[in-house]
Image 1 (cartoon, rainbow, N blue to C red):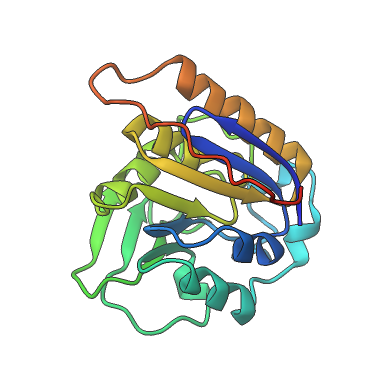
Image 2 (image 1 turned 30 degrees about the vertical axis):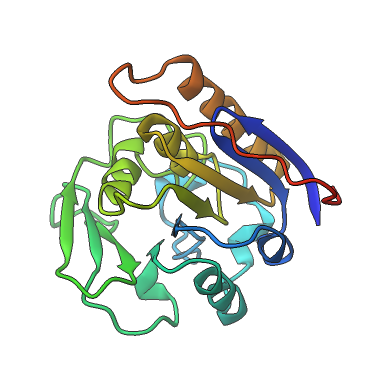
Length: 217
């Protein structure tokens, strides 16, 4: 069930449970998402600054992963090394530029459904403001989308604070995000609106998505 939704620029932001909402949406060119993973890592000082949410103790199960892979022909799933996914050569790696003796992970990995060589993106984990404890840099999600040049419709079923949709708006793609927590859903709406208000003048903005008639909200 869709509890609420907003359409901002070329993006559609849905408040609801992704397992209930995904069957209502049809197919997408690709899924680019960052599900909850590594939740048991309690010594992460960044996560300690944020109030714990229900999803902190909720694993991403095989039913959700199967649903994600059913709605698109290509997927990039961050934390893929934590999940029960098929073998893949096409891992994307975020090198966080952390020293070897640092207590937290020096990198994070995304499972990519494409049979291709692994790729590495280097950017410090410091230097960007987080409104969600596991928020990725916008540049990282733009890098991911760069490997999907033909994908014009993108789904993020774990939208969080909306980084994937911000990247979609900046790159002229149509993104649909689903988020279960209303606080983060509102933050995502605000961040996407800022992306609409501050467009890249060298990239055509995405067209608004058509409204499906007769859908129960």
